Length: 74
Image 1 (cartoon, helix red, strand yellow):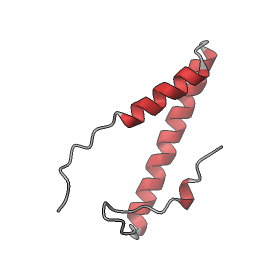
Image 2 (image 1 turned 120 degrees about the vertical axis):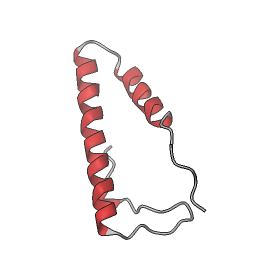
Image 3 (image 1 turned 90 degrees about the vertical axis):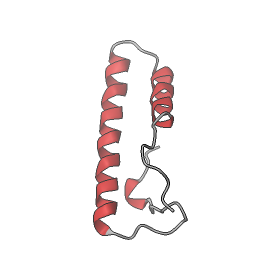
């Protein structure tokens, strides 16, 4: 199962659609880069003998541990 990045409708904190073409392009490119890096890390780990499920779990936990350094906008 692969996430279709092109189908994502990005929204702001209040639910408004992010319609700016350039912002959507940047989000698409960033997710594609993350996908490729995560794919490479998974492949490396499996080739080195690591458990695939453990690696997937670690990658998911890594995403959940990201910190937003910006205060909420009012």
